[in-house]
Every structure is written in C-alpha cells, then in structure tokens.
Image (cartoon, rainbow, N blue to C red; front, side, top):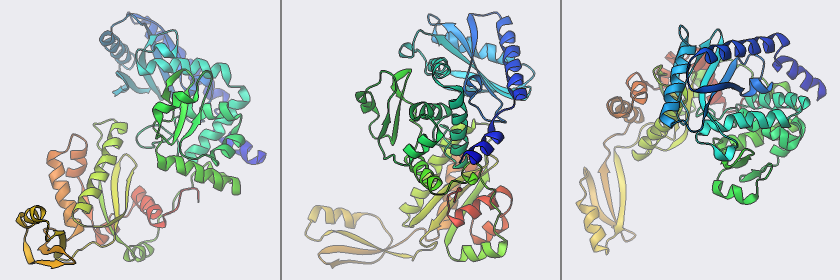
Length: 452
C-alpha cells in the first residue's frame, strides 16, 4: 500500500517550481488589485492552492477582494466586477455567479477567480455565501498537518479516479473542501476509505461546536457534513444519492483489491464497429447528439441538460414507451442523450381500462374524453374498456417532435441543444460513432463503473 500511495503522490504532488510560480502569480495579481482605487482593504488567497492541498497541474487561484461589512450589497457587486474586469484587461474573462456575480478568467495560464467578499468576524456573521471561504481557509491552515495535506491529495485523486469529485452540477459530488474535512475527521486516507465503505444514507459528520440537532435541517440528504465555520451549512449539499452510493461501492472494491486504476481513470478504447453493430442489435437504443452551447456557463448548462434529459425521458413515458435506461454525456463540445427502451415501436392500438361501469359519474367522464376510438366500450371484470389509436408509435418520432418543439419554447441554452440536435437510430449512431462519443458509448454499452 505504501508503494502504491508513494507512486500516486509522486504523480499528483505539485513541484517546488509550480508552488513558487503560483505564489509569484498571486503576488503579481494582488499588487495589481491594490493599485486600483476603490473601497477594498486587502486580498486573500483562498482555495486548495493557498493551503497546498491541490493536485499537480491544477492552476487555479481563488482570490477574495475584501470589503468592510457596512458596504451596500449592490455597491459590493459593482466594485467587485469593476476590479475583476480591470485585472483581466487584455485577458480572456467571463462573468460567473455565486450569491452575486464575479469575474473569472485566464491570467497568464492560470484560471483565476476575483471574488468580492465582506470582512466579518466569524462564519456565523456572513452577509454573502462567499464570505465563508476565507474562514474555511484559516480553519484548515490551522488544523491540517503537513502529513495530512498529502493524505488529502490521495483522497482527491481517488475521488477524481472514481468520478466523484466536484460540487458542480456536472459531478454532483463532494467539493475539495469536503475531502479536506474528511481527512481532518478520520485522520488519514486509509481510515477515511475504511469509514466511507461503512457509510449508510443519512451519515452525519460533526466538527467543533456542532451538535446532532444541527443536522436536522438537512434531513433526507445522503451525507451531512456540518461546516465547522457555519453550523447552518451542509458541505455535502451537492452530493447526489447516486454519487454517495458510488463512493461506498468504490471504496469497498478498493479495499478488496487496491490498484492504481482507482486513482487514474483508464482510457476507454472504443469497440470496433463490427462489435458495436452486434451490441446495438441486442438493444432497442436511440440517441440524441448535439453541441454544447458556448454562450452559457458550463455549470448552469449542466443543470439545464439534466432537466432536459428528464423531460425527454418523461415524454417517452407519456407516449407509453418503457425507458429502461436514460443517460447524459458531454465533453463540453458535444452533448448526447442515450435511451435504452423496451421497444422502439408500439402497436397502433392501445387498450385503456376505465372505472367500474357502475361508477356513473367517472364512467361518463371516461367515455366523453376525445380519442380516436377503434373498438369498445365494453365491460371486462366490471370495468369499462376502450381500444384507441395511438398518435405516435415510433420512439424516434416522439423525440424528434420534442426537439422541434423545444427549439422554440425552451430557455437559452437548451433551445440551442434542441435546435442543433440529431436524433439517431441504430444506423445514425454507427455513422456518428467517433472520437469521445465513441469512447462514451462503449462505456455505456459495457455498463461498468470506470474503476472496474
């Protein structure tokens, strides 16, 4: 195990050269911000790079521009955006959103966020959600040992390897801060993995002055990590039940057979087209392939895509198709929805069972409803029965019609996905089987977790 961990850490620990470059970049941007006239008092470097718990290759700098708490919220927003835009003048930037908007962008090869924040004396006095972050930083700098920082790196890379890293809408998993708290709570990587393997839904982790009653407001969450700087926040609020159970399954598998593949995802080699055709013959599968909108922040778009996947699945179900599996994939260039159905084509005739014939009021309503009647009404086992004509019998046509409709009615982002979509049958899937989509579809058809 020590050999495995040492090997992983050699790959994921930033070099001294990287660390010096990060510090130099922080000092350069800090100097630039402090030269800008305004109502800010100082700049705080937060996030994993400030705590030295980040991974090799991560070039993220989270910089918090601090303002007095008496400043009006609207003025904080205006000042924060003004300073952010000034920092990125001549560089690539975009407006992002937390509780209030801020500027993020690429500054000389680093992904930098310039976030305005209030100076408050404790996490309990926050005026804005981002005000907690400087306290997170101070807390972990005080609590984590140098040895534990390496344990954090192991846990972060493990979670990346099993696809359970990130509180964004793409991942629906744990943020890096949550992983630092896990190491703090359990002591090291091994003990954390052993503990996760024994978790059950509703697991609660407490720090400092938190009590069990603080977790009651989060009942129903699979995991509750009470934020040590704010007892009214669950650090694991973004974690879905699916990702929670995936973490448990993966840790159990790792304990059984610890291998490097749990830390570093293996590239998926696409099935040869002949094997793909054989696999598709075994299933009733349709796909929607489109492009990822560039005009909307990725995290916002992921939320829209998940909702649109569910809407498409529900439309198929409304039309009597049995959806056995529905999945979303994107590399943020392409987007794909894939559906495995019980059958792709239904009979033209549909049998509808109504109320008891003696239930006069409901029977009348049932019979008066407009339908294309084929036969009936008749009584079977006491109930009224009709046979009616289905309007749509082909799953692919149901999805095509929904895409046409959504191109006109959906909000910005989703409407673009619908407008540019191609609804693919078996032949269309084979024709578009290339690149990252081919790797994804291979994983979908094999149906295995990436660490198996």
